[in-house]
Length: 413
Image (tube, rainbow, N blue to C red; front, side, top):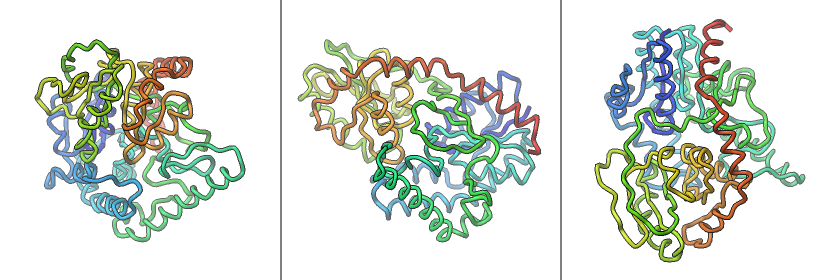
């Protein structure tokens, strides 16, 4: 079996697919990964073949993701980011098509942020599977819409009217983007939607949601979507830095691997927080495994580490203060840890809404809200235990095997 995996070079998107790639290799599959050139050494270190995408502009995708300022709530910045992403698509398609021509895959697996893989798959008559670690990114026609600041379900008629208006606004915005960026979207036939109304960025046959259905709000989903469970493991685990001894319960603080603008002041904010929270000690992760530095104590009860492999490290902590990224959200759930969720940008507001709705976290708007670490630790254990059990019961790799087998058995459907 020959499999082509396509993903942008972002940890939260690429790494789950690299775990899948390693699993496929154990099934004697020949796996090639198409991704940004900066991640090519990581892919090769796993013994996997790699086909760089946009090799002539190695940091093109990273420049778009690693913004210098927040995007959410800033229409001009959001428009510029959408424009820059769409302008890369025709060139990325050329590279993905070349990878498919070289590999001659039986199946193409694409992260939801690599939609040109679906175009290439359709051209070649090859079945393709979309993986999405943020299931609520998919547009809905019933229920509470996402990407509007973290809305939660409302039972009253004003709430239902708000949701209906949000859904209409979402679709209207995408139609407007389709008109403004018609040239860039020509690879998709000039539209973000198929004739049946489904979104062209996702497979019309098989979408694997790398999350828990129980965490999501009540809404509709595409017919081909299956929840298979999160993948939080790293494909090439980084040795955890040695933590310095503390005499107070430790709280992990992270804003993930992106958001450089949020990291500029993070350590100073946590030092100020520790001064107001004498009952806890804090470990700040800078979210960059490339930093070859040791753990550093920067203040009483505050230490800074370059990187934390979440799953391996969670046993050391009583709670987590995080931004609401998919990886840390599900790692904290797997460990049964309460969270103080501090969303900064993108989909993080929607993860925060779901965590708070299910009693798994408290949400803060800034780290100045000093009372929330103890409040998170006092959350009832039943919801946390329930979701930890759901995490342990999920088997995304087995579900992925079943999806691949279905795709190969009926390639023409």
